[in-house]
Each structure stands twice: as C-alpha cells, then as structure tokens.
Image (cartoon, rainbow, N blue to C red):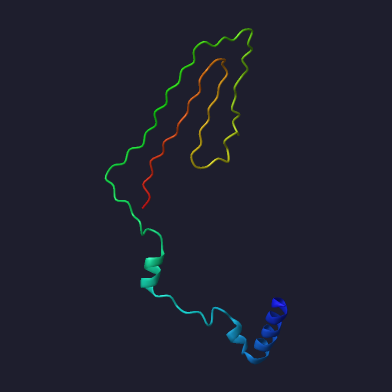
Length: 111
C-alpha cells in the first residue's frame, strides 16, 4: 500500500510541478559558514606538548624440550611487500621453543 501511495503522489507531483522543481538541488537550502564550522570534525581537540606511548612485554620459556627438529627456511620474496602502504610489521621464526613477542607503537600528530 505504501508503494501505491508513493506512485500516485509521484504522478500527481509530476503532472503539476515544473521540471526545475523536481531537481532537489534547486530547492535545497544553502548552509551558512557558521553552521559548517560547527558541523565539521575537530570539535574535541586534544592539546598536548608531549605524548609518550610505550609497550612492555615479559615472557619466559623454561622447561621445554625439542628433539629431532628440522627448522625450515624463512624467506620474504622481493615482491612480497610491493603493493604495501602504511605501517606493516613482519615477524618470522625458524626456531623451536622460542617466545615471540611483538608490539608496534605509533605516535601520530594530525593537524
């Protein structure tokens, strides 16, 4: 029923309205500079002189045994990161009984 009502309203509007009135941009209200200033991002700005981020990790590998292990090769091919952008991190391991801990700390200043 909603769709039927909408179609009837559309046909009535089309018959009675001028062509330029159908353009939604022609009848749109112009927004003021003050309204746009208060609507854009940056309302909550954090002012800092210095900001430090850090990561502390602790690990312990004890009491493990590994016998008759074969460690493989660990290779990154020349084109593996060819289309990369941004910040990326690679962690590789070819050993046994190892503890891998990894942290990435990125400090950004966006203005």
